[in-house]
Image (cartoon, rainbow, N blue to C red; front, side, top):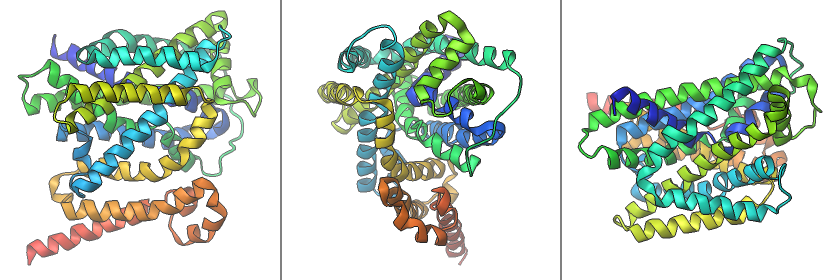
Length: 426
């Protein structure tokens, strides 16, 4: 396989592992509600759903290890707890959500069958893919992703070229920060450190003789290409939602809006093509999550294939159990976990991308601890204690935007680096 083809296959595989249920249903409604400020919402959304995730892939290219390596500089114990939290959240929420979206948008319109049947069949197929570990990169990169990409471009292109650029009013008070917070719901930053590990192991299985630098270059190039693909699709879906603002009820749900958009753009074939799109996009993400979790547990148990298979079974059973719930319910349940774990994930990604000179063990510890402390108010607010947090938000910069951790984390990062430079100079 030529180097260019290898980069493209890896980039397509990365894109499909990222692009799942949330990536498909969140942007159109965001655009629908953003009005003339769709571009500002897009910028915010792409910070948390494109830039940070791709930096996560670049961090993987640098580390070439597992998720455990991301937090090791804080402490091995922290890293182990963090890893289990990430994988626990991933197989309990975003993975089952893919089955729920598939049922609502690809099965229910055609068959009057219960959600539990969809979840069982869906995760049986996921399990078959996960067990065939060595073939995942080629199957995703060569077969499934081109289909996803083509249908998405068809929907977006038709909407953009057949509608006048007339927008409604925005419902967002803070479009940029609202876009960032909605990007949390894609799980893409978490996805980056989970599926990045899948890509690393897949490349190691295929390119056993490749050097560290060769693998690093391949992952970096594929990561930027996948990021460009995500940027184009997200911006296109948000713009599509904004352009079609007058054609649907203001209180429309995420899934209903996506169905409506596909019917508006693709006509009578819209439902069928959307069903194929949803099935492919959701399925590839579920495969990536269960594979990543199984890979991690296998590594912790010294390469035990039995541990890999047992984890895959548990991941699929959890998917069946949670996948029968409504999409909206899963999104609401996920919010508190995201408000707590996402900021920690973002700072770990950024610190691992930085040169060693600016990211010592002391910096890691100080920044992560600060982030955890200042994420607590946002977490408490997301579980229904928002009224009691109002006074606290007034004292924390950006607190009222649910990003109170940002400036304290940046401040402590700068302070520790200046402190260490003075120590080394004395």
